[in-house]
Length: 485
Ligand code: C2O
Ligand code: CU
Image (cartoon, rainbow, N blue to C red):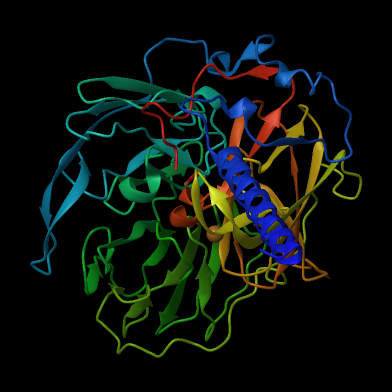
């Protein structure tokens, strides 16, 4: 063989070895080794704040307070006691469709739990037959961290035959929901969900009818409280009704009212200030989000369309087409003071979602990135108690409903336009492609908190980061039976 040809062959061989080596290294690097602690995941992002622990030292998870201690220490009788028995079983929808599902006390959605602000809620979750194990996460509630219900982060999954007791006192009235946070991208669609309503101290206004409308899709069949089609509500002309819309899906949902003007009273369990009457607007409810709608039933009846099924209040008016315009919370209602200084944050984080080829959990593919990195190298946003935190979200591709556990975030601006309406607090923020949002929150609930996309399929594909308070340790492990996504 002539020398030139031989040299070329050697060069190609070396190139191939280098390429394979790099790809192999990327693959190996993407593996989440068996069991691991959430504190070893990701890269600490200090957001310009000061470090209080030694991050180069394997994130120091030997020392510090265990998050298992972060719960109410009192043991007295609770004000509201609920037993939830989780089962895997077949259900039949009212459409006649028969399917495998996950139920709580034999039903899906599970029972509506109601409590007043400050009351102690005690929920015993018993797993009768969910073979992967299960948990309950209290979506939107600022629970103590040990009660957050995330398998592998705040507790171990509850195996068949076992139980777990959740105890917490909700601090804010509003509409919440609960769902499994073990294999959540499978267990939530299968129906392990329910509504939680926190009433103001002293209970609800008896003059207002209170209606929960939990919207959930069972294998593509959209339901309201488990019912398909037109769902009648027992209401008469002149009745004032508060409808609590809950979107358990992976994507945003549109809600619109026909027959009468309405007010949007609350978003994600936070009351809006001075909401005006509106008509001819659709309300977008983010995946995981809630919207509370107030209306007075007219003589001719009212209807709330919820993306397929509808709620009918009084006699059924004809369905109107979906309004073209959206009610924009950025400018809806009136401003009100905020009890922290959003202009002087202690930490500034960026949460930019992109996508690029690589390996996640050893699988090649086009995977989501957060700030340019694939899971598990996604950020660990570090904070200290009492700090004001600023987050800039941006999506370069898809719709991503961003959900922060244990806190509520105040929307400051969208695409550079400042919020001018009522304070707009969210725990689930719909981030559309090409959009960016600025939010701020107060770090007032110590713990290890998931901060992820609530398109649960995206989360399972690695769209997960964490908010971590300094000086805490996590005694649970992801892997070996704990799979939060
Ligand atoms: Cu509604 Cu991390 O969840
Ligand atoms: Cu997403």
